[in-house]
Each structure stands twice: as structure tokens, then as C-alpha cells.
Image (cartoon, rainbow, N blue to C red; front, top):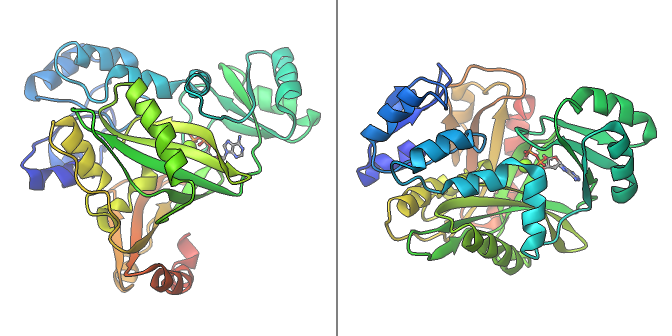
Length: 349
Ligand SMILES: Nc1ncnc2c1ncn2[C@@H]1O[C@H](COP(=O)(O)OP(=O)(O)O)[C@@H](O)[C@H]1O
Ligand SMILES: [Mg+2]
């Protein structure tokens, strides 16, 4: 999606992706190699003027190698900040951004202590490499500890209080090379089984200013360049920080049709030193993820104002294989269009 946004700007792309079936490969040269393959990284940096990443678990070693040779935006320290859930929470606190109660849990004994601090229910998470709800276990009572520890305990863990949130929201911000910033309207996200299902931008959300304050503080602290996504829980009408992603984000896919400038174009503008584009909404929109399999294209294409994106990925349970964005001229029109859409796609959502 970055490349698709970049070609109209006259940009060209080289992709480094260890997956043989990289979904970007039809769109440019694909270096099929491990992230830490020095020969591949050398070829990579020789062919490009600026590098970026859209996956937060790129090894820091690879990021440092690239950043020592050509501009890597956002810089490796942003990557590091998002890779460890414990360090991430400590950084939020250091910046005065409220977080749920949490504690490290590196042994079964420490897990029990951690639970005294967080209370129950709580969510046990691997500190590293988790995504789409993977590497997490819910603890409801003391009886769950052993099993959760067996499932996850081989790695460093963090225990977080379960947050009885009213809503989940994310804020996408973008910071340019000259330090100017822009923010998209707050997005309401619905997750099921830890996986994002729908995202809906909300104009004039009462928490917009607070979210922007947190995001601005973080982006300035990291001397950030590019798009950054910040996920929050809303409890008692206040924001509690969940996590950040130092990249374009699934909860911003609606910006392709729903905003004046998409998150992808704005990320490219930022990292290539161009001025940022407007983040204004173009009407109302709702994004739906397709998880596991895609509905038949003929079926999707028959739905008015639905914009379909297939990723060319092999269908697999719990894998995001595509998304679609429903657009409408107003919130009222979108509200009216959602129930028929859900009915038409009931078998796939
Ligand atoms: N402490 C928590 N309290 C309540 N729900 C949680 C908590 N942590 C995670 N979740 C739920 O699981 C989803 C995925 O967890 P998250 O920490 O964002 O990990 P990732 O997106 O990297 O898999 C969240 O969006 C939320 O719906
Ligand atoms: Mg998340």
C-alpha cells in the first residue's frame, strides 16, 4: 500500500522481505533474504536513497546496519521503543502518558507477585514479537496461572491489568523532516480475539486533543519522522495508553478513501522530506478487515461505495488477507449503510 501510494508521486521501490510470497513483490524489486543478511542489506542500501519499515519486528541489527549507510526513517530508536512492551510502558510513564497497571513477570513466582500489583483479571503478554493478539493469555483466577505460564513462560513476559474499556481508539500522527506534525481524526477500533476487525474515524471526538498531546510528546521525544500509530483504551472517558506502532497502521487503512491524504502517502511525504498533506476527512467511512479468507470479489464488487483491497496472501486462519472501506457522504448515511453491509458479508466477518 505504501508503494501503491508512492508511484503517483514518482517514487520507486525496492523491498527486502524474508517471505517468498511477499505481497509487495509485484510492485518492485524484491530482495528475498533474511533481515540480517548483510549481503542483501548491502545490495538494498546501494539501490535506494531512503529506507523505511512497515513491520515493527525488523531486527534492530538490520535497522542499525541500514541507518549507518543511508537515512532510515523513522530512526532505529523508534523501532526499539515499540519492540518491548515493558520498555514501551516505561517510556509512556516517563512522558506523563497514563498506562494500565503492569509489572514484569519472568518467573512463576514473579507472575504471582505481579498479579497482586495488577489485580485480576489481567492479561499476560510476551514482551516481544506479539501481534494480532498472539502471545497473550487472559488470567481470570489463580487457577489460570500455571497454564498461562506453560504457554508463554519461555520468554520475558509482562502482566497488565485487564482494562474494562468503554472503547478502543487509535490516533495516527505524522511528523515531517522539518518537525511539522499532522494528526488524523481519532479512530474507533473493534477487536475480536485480539485481532482488529473494524476501524471507524470519528470527527470531533472529545478525546482528540488529549490523544494528539500524547502523540506529539512521543514523536518529539523520538525525533520521529513518518506515520506513528498510538492505540488507547478509553476508561471513564480518559485515555490509557496501550501500545504504539512505529509505522503505517491497520487502523489507518480507511485513510486511502476516507482522508484527503492517505497515511501511506503522508508517510512517504515525511520520509522523503516533502510537506505533509491534509489529514482532513472526506465524508464518513468504516474499514472492515478480512481475516482468514476473502469474500468472492464479485460479491464485494456488487456493494455500493465499498472499496476493496486484496493483499495477494494465501488464505490462512487468523491471517489478514484484505480489507474493504465503506464510504458515505455523512455519518447518518454511513450508519444507514452499515447494517446491510454486515448482512451481505455476515459469512465473512
Ligand atoms: N490490558 C488489556 N485490557 C483489555 N484488553 C486488552 C488488554 N491488552 C490487550 N487487550 C485486547 O487485545 C487487543 C490486542 O492487544 P495489544 O496489546 O494491542 O497487542 P497486539 O495488537 O500487538 O496483538 C487489544 O486491542 C485489546 O482489544
Ligand atoms: Mg494492538
